[in-house]
Structures are given as structure tokens and as C-alpha cells.
Amino acid sequence: MKKILSLVLLTLVAFSTFANGQKESGKIVIGANIYSFADNFMNGVVKPELESYAASKGVDIQIVDSEGQQAKLNDQVDVFITKGVDVLAINLVDPAAAQTIINKARAAKIPLVLFNKEATEAGAMASYDKVWYVGTDSAEAGIIQGQMMVADWKANPSWDKNGDGVVQYVLLKGEPGHPDAEARTVESVKAFKDAGISVKQLALEADPNWSTQHGNDKMAAWLTSSFGKDIELVICNNDGMAFGAITAQKAAGVRLPTYGVDALAQALTHIGDNELDGTVLNDGANQARATVDLAINAAMGKNPTEGTSWVIKNDGTKAVRVAYVPVTKLNYKDFQ
Ligand code: GAL
Ligand code: CA
Image (cartoon, rainbow, N blue to C red; front, top):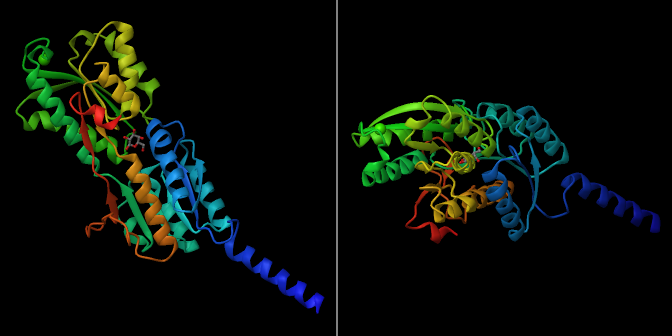
């Protein structure tokens, strides 16, 4: 009798270990990554909220650092699948590599929520019924930043240093090929053209890491270049690069109109100190919450937005898009 009982027990233990893979019994496990822990916004805003929100929902989230290498992420996804996670929440390193990840998830029959970097390959999202995206409307940040800059330009005639009616600008772009970087670059400048104001690009530099170091290095080089004295506006596609641009300006003893995107805590401080003219809230906390909510529903086989306030428009992108908000001297305190 004893023998039979222990055999039954053993079988039960073996079965539940098999069924749950590496996870704690009963708990949903989300296998997640951040494309690079060196990224201010992803590491400082999105990652902590993924962790705390998942904890508040009673699910287990494992977040790994892909260190800016898509090949590394591919391996990390293989490991998550082998471990038997219930759902994947993936921040692509290369937005053009979505199909690789989708194929892996589909083959393993594991639902997948992509977040922050939207797939750029046509047809990728349609190739699997259990993949969704959480992010923003990339163009929106550029439109808001552009409108903010146009209003300030009009209100400050002295910003047109050479009085030619043309905005001589430099632009820190961020990651080439990233939908956010591409759309912001086009839309912010388009806002001037739409307002009937001519612009002249003096320089533009891209950086796959969106980094402060890059912002500092480029701004410092531009300020000492042949066109250094002509710069009238510094457009930064994220705050991280704007922080570097601010440091370089301080070192050179100049203060040029400067704008960012993300509304990181440090950016709000810079606005209060009159070192930054505006930014755009990239609501990483809500993007993290939507990612976790969709992941949990998907893991339970439910409709991804069931019981939540997130909306997936019927436009084929299968995306939850969290709104951007303008942040200026007038309202920055509301975000601190
Ligand atoms: C953007 C954000 C950048 C950077 C990038 C990473 O939405 O504005 O600062 O974090 O995502 O993909
Ligand atoms: Ca000018």
C-alpha cells in the first residue's frame, strides 16, 4: 500500500513539474526582456513598472537584458520556450526581426506580446493569431513636440538669431529604422512647414542606443563646428540624448532652445531649471501595465483586452496604443 501511494505521489509530482515547466505551481510565468538595460526610458520607467504591476497581479515575470543584440534575444526566447513559460513579452532589439520571434512563439504555441518596438515587416503581425503589440502611435510624439516648438518659436522672436525667418536646427535622431525615431524626425519638422515656417537642417545624427553620451558628443562637436554659431534649435527624439545636449551646451556656455521626448524625471528637473524647453510624456508605466494585462489574458486563453480598459483598433496592427502628452514649463509639475 505504502509503495503504491509513494508511486502515485511521485507520478503526481513528476506530472505537475512537467506541466508547469520551471514555474512555481499555479502561477502564470511571463518570459520578458528589455532590448537594453542601458536605455534610460526602458530600464528606468518600463522595467520597474513591468515588475511591480506583474507582482500586483500575482504573476511571475522574468526579465532579461538583451544588451542591444538581436541574436542574444533570439537565444533568450529559445530558453524561455524550453523552460515552458506561459507567455512571452518581447521588446525587439531590431524592429525588422519580429518575424523570427513570431515564428518561434507560433511553433511553441505560446502567445506573444511585443512592446515598445513595433514590427516593421509587412505581414508579420498577421502571421500568428496569438501575437499583439503594445506601444504608442509613433508619429504622435513628433506632432506634439513639433507643435510645442512652433508655438515657442512664434512667441520668442529672438530665437531666430540671424533674423532670416528660417529655423536652423540640429536633430538627434535615435535608432535608425526604429518607427519612433523615423516618425518623430519627420513629424516634428513637418509641424514648422505646416505652420508656414521654413526650416534648415544643419546636422542630423542617429544612435541605436538613444544615449546621453551620444547626445553630449554630437552636441559638443556641432557647437565647435563651422555652423556652431548658427544653431537656433536642438531637436532630440528622446530625453536621454537631450540630457547630453544640455551638458554639452553648459560646457560651451550656451543655452539653445532644446526639446526631448519621454518626460523622464530628470527632464522635468531640467524644465524647472530652465535648461530644457519641453518634452512629451511617453507613458511607459501604462505601456508596461497594458503589456502585463494582455500577457495574462493571452496566457489564460482569453481575449487579450478582456476585463481591461485597453483598446485594440480593428486596423490590422493588433496594437494597444498609449497616448502621448505634451509637457512644458506650464504643466511639468503635474508629472513630478
Ligand atoms: C522610445 C523612447 C526612447 C527609447 C526607445 C527604445 O519610445 O522614446 O527613449 O527608449 O523607445 O526602443
Ligand atoms: Ca534663422
